[in-house]
Amino acid sequence: MSVVAGRNDAAIAAAALRSDRFRIEREADWKRLEDILDRMERGRISRLADEDLLELPVLYRTVASSLSVARETSLDAATLAYLETLVQRAWFLVYGPRTSLLGWLRRFFGGEWSRSVRAIWPEILVALILMVAGTAVGWLLCAADPQWYYSLVPGQFLDVRQPGASREVLLGTLFGNQDQPQLSVMAAYLFNNNAGVAITCFALGFAFGVPPILLLIQNTTPLGAMLWLYNGQGLTLDLIGWISIHGTTELFAILLAGASGLHIGRSMAFPGDLSVLDAAAKAGQRASVVMAGVLIMMAIAGLLEGFARQLIDNTPARLAVGYGILAFWVVYFFLFRRVPPASEAI
Image (tube, rainbow, N blue to C red; front, side, top):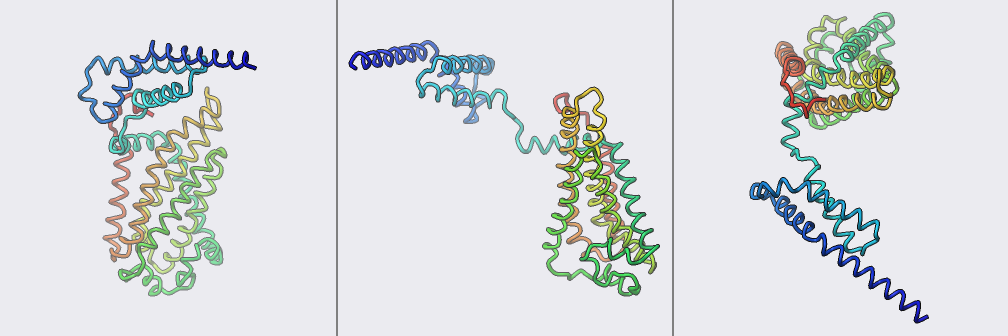
C-alpha cells in the first residue's frame, strides 16, 4: 500500500514539476499578451506602441499553441483555465467584431440596405404584380357578388363600412376622427399585425417561394374589396388618400418582405452552380438585411396609421404626405448608390 502511495506522490510531483517548467518557459509571452489586452480593454489603444500592436496576433497564436499543448499533456486545471481565458480575450480583440452600434447603423442606412433591395429587384417586380393582381381579384369578386366583401375584409372594418352604406356614412369613416382615443394602442396593434404578415412572407420563402405568392395575393384582396365599396359612392380618391399616409410605407414594406421570401425560394429552386443549402444561405443573408429594414418601415407605418391619418383630415394633404413618403423610399432604394468598400459588399 505504501508503495502505491509513494508512486502516486511521485507522479503528482512529476506533474507539478512539468507544469512549473512549462509555465516558466512560456510565461513571459503570456504576461506580455495579458498586459496588452488589459490596456486595450481599458480603452488605451492609442497609448500602445506600434510594436505591441504588431506583436498582438503573434502573441495570440503563441498562447493558443500553449493552450493546445497544455490540453494534450493534461497540465493542472489552474493553468488550463488561465490560458483559456487569455485566448478568448485575445481572440475577441484580434478577430472579433469591431463595429459599434453607431457604425453598424451608419453602414446599414448608408448603403447596405438600399443595395440589398436593388439586388432583389426581379422578385420585387414579381411581388408587385402579385399585389396588384390580389387587389384586382378582391374588386372583381365583390363586383360579381357583394357577399364576397364579408369574406375578404377583416372584421374590424365591418362596422358601417358594408355594401349598401350611404355616401355620408362612408365619408364619416374617412374624416372627422381627429379626437379618436387610444391612437397609440391602435398604432401598436397595427405594427404587430403588419410586421407579422411581413415576417411570415419572408420566413415561408424557404418553401420554394410558394407561400409568399399566396400571402401577397391574400393580403391585398381586402384592399380591392374596400376600393370597390368606396368607388360605388364616388369616394375612390378619398379612400386612396386615407390609405396613402401609412399605406405607401406599409404596402412597400410588405412588398419587400414578399420579395425577400421569393428571392430565397428562387435561389433554392434554381441554385445554379451552388448547392441548395449554399444558395439558400447566400440569398438569406441578403434578404435578412432587407427584412431588418422592413421592420423599421413597419414601425413607421404603424405610427403614421395610428396618428397622422387621423390628424391630417383632408385628401390633398393626405395624398401629398403619403406619396411624398413613397417618393422618398423610391429615391433611397433605387437612386441612392453609395459605392461600398469591398469588405461591405454583399
